[in-house]
Every structure is written in structure tokens, then in C-alpha cells.
Length: 264
Ligand SMILES: [Zn+2]
Image (tube, rainbow, N blue to C red; front, side, top):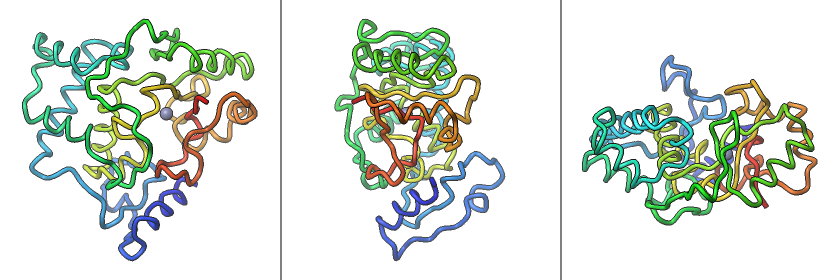
């Protein structure tokens, strides 16, 4: 199903230059490219060669930051706090000027050129998430915004059962950037391909309301189309107080994401 969505997006971009080839040939043997990302179009945009080293440094610095402040805090840490930690703790190390420029570019760029057509959700790179606006959900390492998102989650667990759990909640700019860089890394620098399976940093609904759910103990499988075949998903679809954000062939150019709950 994801493949169909991918192809439609590519077709939409420009049928004449569509040049699909199998990712395993292109990307070698690391096996990290997901099955729904099998096609690369000629017009796909990659991280510039001269930026690659900076890209790797930035990605690694964010990983060190995560290790230092912890997974939970990393979900909601602001850019300013990240800069503070990096400056003051040698385990992380100060961001270089080049890293900050790349960070800003990736944040403020219009992702339509990558084939991503979703709405902008975060307009300022310095957006802060206040701890009093969120609640940490026990045993998940994730947060939810108080109000409708938290109420929806509580309610859906009552309706579906304790086998459904939060797999990703509130994400600040740093967290989404880190996920974005990880995805770009997996696609060997192909930003267009990456933004098909992860929203660019300023375009995620995780920064304002939405969250991901999965079946307890299912790990990474919760982020694959397999989730759509679970009992939990079947029950999820019956609930009228939430919706699915990224349906098959959605207009945002995002892959099918049955696990991503749209807060309405
Ligand atoms: Zn999501």
C-alpha cells in the first residue's frame, strides 16, 4: 500500500522523469530503507556533498544530547536549551556555525520541493514546550499535550484496552529535527525520500497535538503497515472522537501511517 502511495506522489511530481529502481541496488546492503520507500525519482533532492560532513556532525551532536539529557527530556527540549547544554557539557560539545546554518536551513525551507505538501505547524525555531502544558505518560518516555490529546489518549485506552500504548507523543523542534536527520541518513542523504516518511521539522503535528499509538511490546513493527492488521487498529478506527492523519494516498505526500492519530 505504501508503494502505491509513493508512486502516486512521484507520478504527481512528474511522470516523465519517473525513474524507479530498487533501493537495495542503490543503497547497498544496510537494509535500512523501508519497503515502502523503494522508488527514487530523478528530481529527488539530496544533501549537498559539501554539507555531508556537517550533516553527520549535527546528527551525532543531537544523538549525544539525547544520551546526555535522556530520551524523555529530548522529546521536548527547546533549541535554546539544547544550545545551552551543548555549550556547557563537553560530552556534547558546542554546535559549530555550519551545523547551526544547516539546522536553520532544514527548519525554514519549503519542503514542497521535496514532495511534502503538509501544513506548517511550527513557525519559530525557538518554540518552547512548557512542562505545565504537557503530561508525561508513565512507562512510555513520551509526553502528551494536556487537553484534547491527553483526553483522547485516556479515552482510547479505556475503549480499546491496555494493549494499546503511546509510541510517540509531543515532539519539539530538536526531536523532530533529530528524527528527520536520522531518516535522511538512512536514505543516504535523499531529503525527498526522507520527507515521504517523516514530516520536516516545522511540519509535524506532533508539535501541536497528534500522537502515535501501537500495540504493547510490538516495537518497530508498530511503525509499519502491519499495525493496520492488528485488533487494536480495528478498534481504533471505530472511534469517532479521533481520526487518521495520514491515510492511503493522502494529499500531504506522506506515506500511509495507520498508527498516527489525528486529534480533532
Ligand atoms: Zn506520528
